[in-house]
Length: 302
Image (spheres, rainbow, N blue to C red):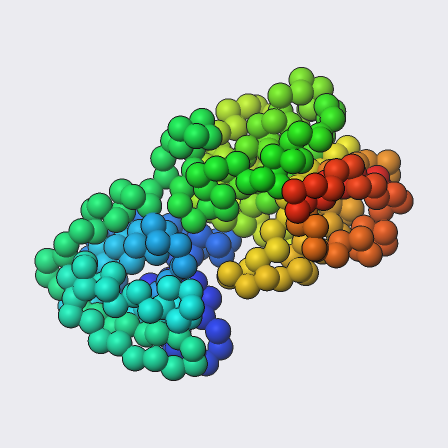
């Protein structure tokens, strides 16, 4: 049976995925790490290409690296999210490339040539690195990978000194967690993120025995963290590039379940996101502590 590599979760009916395909998307907990797969080890690959330029080129270059010469690559993306640029990228790596369009996507097909060009540079450009502006490890594709997100900055500015056992939901590369851990009164801090790349970077950045970092989807929380004194979070509201307000709602509900009675959740959200109803149902009190710059910082007590 041909060994198939799969990156991403294509919409049903968009492409045919063979049984047993090896998932390598870092956004799907439990997947394999594309960067660690051996050269020329797969017969075919199906890639839902990410939208970011450095991230996309890194994924496609690594996929070509692990394909056997002559192996087939099918990659696709919505036309308005990078699909129109896929052909040029693949031609730069070695082409020729076949292209077609359907269901608002562009599809490109390529047989892996014996000689590839430019893949080492693309892999290097998309790999984890120490980002001087952050003073921390990060990687293209991680949320706000090369700068402190403005929402997180506002939350950090308003956070009091925290104490006891806590969690950072959607920890990213660990910048908010590092601020929380500056308090010697913090006993433990569990940091959760659904992006394997973010988790690997956070493990680099949080060199503190009080911190544990988990590759985990908060929406599938397993009740392993309960009775916490505090939770901090900058919840996501995009899933696969599409706005999904239920993501933030799920984060709020999970935070409430994690906290002890009287525990506190500090969160930041874009001003337009309507979390007030779920906060009112899950917490005893919820108070806006800052509302400026398009963000609101909320303190909620269980």
